[in-house]
Length: 184
Figure 1 (tube, rainbow, N blue to C red):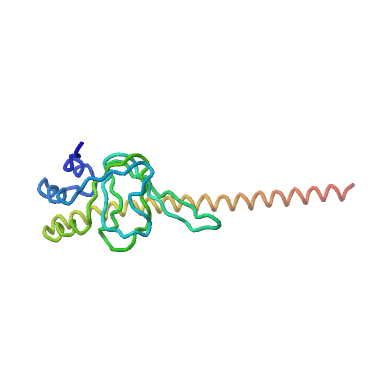
Figure 2: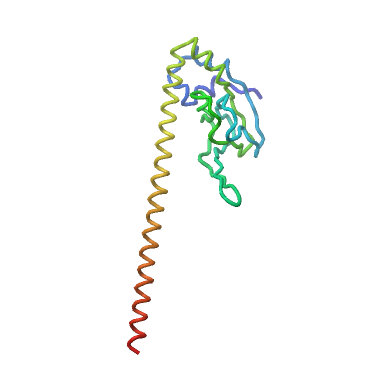
């Protein structure tokens, strides 16, 4: 079954405030792709040549933390239908900072950044609106990441304080125990 690309583009925050004509220009860049559950949409450190709009399924955005003896995978986010991912490819040509893994059978709109850049160059208003919307999306994600990091830091700090308290408590118990032994 073919996707209704215009309907999907209407639902993504990347295309807020674009006209039907402008959406049609973006739709011309899109191609439907399917990925089975468990497959990689893109690998960490691979070239970022396209971005994606998730149509169906869920995609996990993950990074690998090198640790010994086995590297650890950390899930940063889970994309749901209507969300975009791989969008940093529009901003720079650096390798991907994370991998995208299909959690379910996934359908996406793949948008090659070269095709989209041509549209953006030919239609400056489209370029402006896409970059403005992308900046809003990236700012929201940065704020969310800051909140997660702040909470992890607070939890970590609380654990350190808890260990100090319990350590003090154990030391005090030992002092009291020795004091009792000294009385005998």
